[in-house]
Image 1 (cartoon, rainbow, N blue to C red):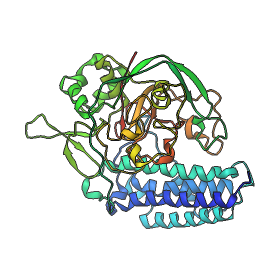
Image 2 (cartoon, rainbow, N blue to C red; image 1 turned 180 degrees about the vertical axis):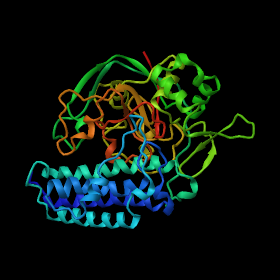
Image 3 (cartoon, rainbow, N blue to C red; image 1 turned 135 degrees about the vertical axis):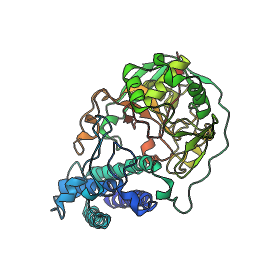
Image 4 (tube, rainbow, N blue to C red; image 1 turned 120 degrees about the vertical axis):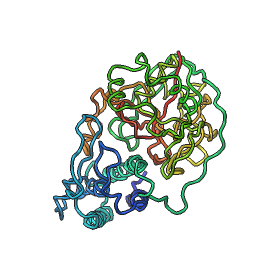
Length: 441
């Protein structure tokens, strides 16, 4: 087959423009004073991320790949790296330590112009990095991942600091009642993808096929209503349900309920939930969003466990006939009927709202509506190699302190829903759209 550089360039141009529109829309929601805010203590101020995505593109594309001389090396360095929430030390900078917002916007426009010019001139035959547009693919997906992680940050801003874009997001469908666990017969689960099969990050490569013993898995994610029983029955204060590190974290932070919940007040035992743009009574049929530590404590309370990464793959992509699917529902690309993802909504949907997305075994909501915690530590697959265009992407987190997450949330872009994609977070980070379901032997 003849390689079509023009078609690849057109595709990358469109995808890069669409990704930029998504990130610009988030910053466009904000009041001016929000740019200096730090809604998650472990993270940079919001202004950092306005510059970071452009600095990443400059450093990867313009400087490293094309050798273009810097026009502002100071900002290239300032906006180069984010912060991982492990470690304890919090940033202590002041708003005045950062450039003016208009200066960052000017930097953004100059970088985008240089990137667009480089893309227009690339024939994609000069090196392995340019073959099939690898470095441009990296830039697009890096931005799409930040569009989601920025949503986590903006979620914790006061309502006065943000406003929904015009048009909003669609309302999700009706709830289907939860119906217990689904038996999954013994079979194989294939993780990863072969080298050069398609674009992927380094931790996605190194295909491994594993035998998975029979087990049962929750048809739906654990809901707010189900988790409420754990809260009311003293799950947060029962030391037998928490590991020593998890208990120390919970006690030091004074955690007594999920981060997204707030007491309704007025002496009642009712709860509210904090959504992106308002606070409302706790929806019992939404999936609960909690940290890995809280999910693990709930699992012990129920006498069950979180699924391994292998078990998630088996339930999501396996089938009674033995073949494995590209997506839980089959081979069709992700669409609106398959789940709550790709920026369709700002908030979760009731569990089971997307029956067209069920797996071959009848397990629901495996993609979208909240990333799903597993019990598997984030480690390289056999044969993985460091990603030479972004060496620290995964390697810095193969530290025994992060857990694999699978699936996706309502703010996960469709390209990141591929079977091989692996997300990860440390167990004491409660600010994200992360839910879970349980398994039994």
